[in-house]
Length: 73
Image (cartoon, rainbow, N blue to C red; front, side, top):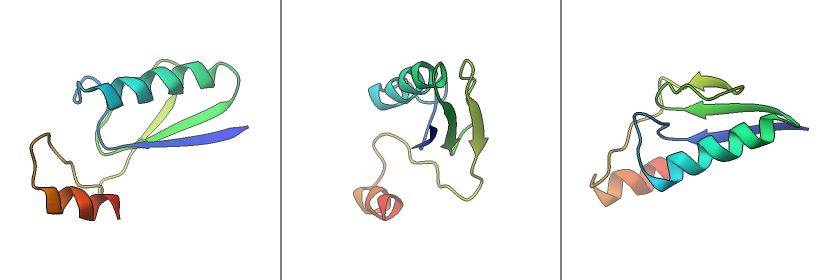
């Protein structure tokens, strides 16, 4: 199966629970499937190909709610 995951930040840039979850699930799935991660920041995930999307705005914790809502759209 081919799987693509999208995350705004990846460890070590992002240190929150969502970033760690994406890292863990991507690495686990990569053991049995073809997995890529698309992100706004580079990340070093074991056995997972990561692509940085340059146009993806980097949202920071505590950023304005309107910017976060637009990003998700």
